[in-house]
Image 1 (cartoon, rainbow, N blue to C red):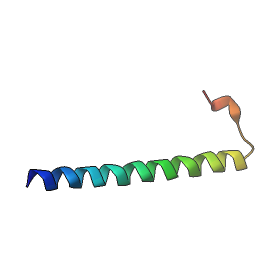
Image 2 (cartoon, helix red, strand yellow):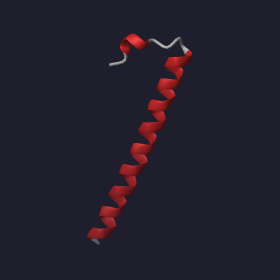
Image 3 (cartoon, helix red, strand yellow):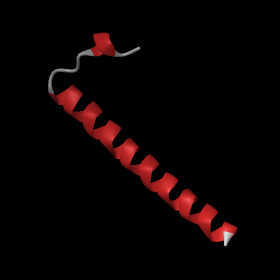
Length: 42
């Protein structure tokens, strides 16, 4: 029971991480397309 719960959490965490990564990539790509404002990069 507990094992299945942990696996479910791990799967959800992976899905969230993948979504965040692709979202960040989209934001970065659109930033570059909009003229590459490098002053905001730290």
